[in-house]
Image 1: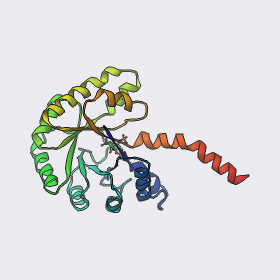
Image 2: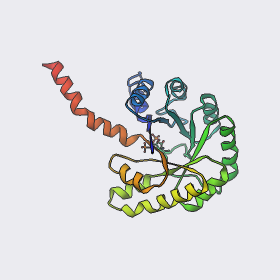
Image 3: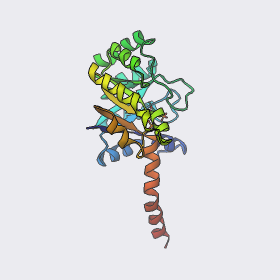
Image 4: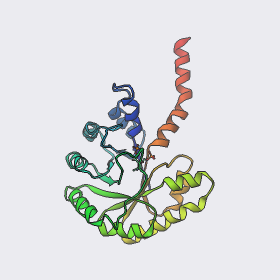
Length: 237
Ligand SMILES: CC(=O)[C@@H](O)[C@H](O)COP(=O)(O)O
Ligand SMILES: NCC(=O)COP(=O)(O)O
């Protein structure tokens, strides 16, 4: 069984665009859990352009499913995660100016750093996952860091699958097999969508969790817009 964790960054983006509190991210998190989401993911960035550090605190009492906080483990992020104590922290090596996450960790080069950070989270009862490209030696490196899980970075899968290239899933399934054998849990995320999720899930043994945001929110707009227009029309009669 693969858990669906919904990334609500885009809800905060929409809220921030008007400076008020619509839509309210905490209410949205409560609703998606009521609708069946099995986790809530946020990815606060240092510039707080979508999720703010205060959102992470405000969400804590309302997330009764899995609470996953993603981010680059700079000091302010580590302090926040240790304060909020989510179920899981996913470490992502984001550059400050990146529009979105665009690479996994070099788990070999950054081994010592990752070992220390991971130990600190685990000592505080927080499960860890590290964002990695689908490269076997990076999975072996991940094992050496002591992390509980990896998150496979699925951007290239999503892009190539969209072009009709199903073979692109092979490195992901090979990495999942290796991770399973090494005792690492396997998560995945980035650009997963209604178009590609079924094939991806079927191809990846032991897929524990997917975190999905951008496409899921866009799909929700498309699939909900007809209903909302009809509701406006009824009120305007
Ligand atoms: C880690 C990852 O894959 C990202 O998808 C991320 O969590 C989304 O971040 P943005 O919403 O800032 O693009
Ligand atoms: N970890 C990936 C995530 O949370 C969502 O990524 P995306 O669906 O917004 O690309």
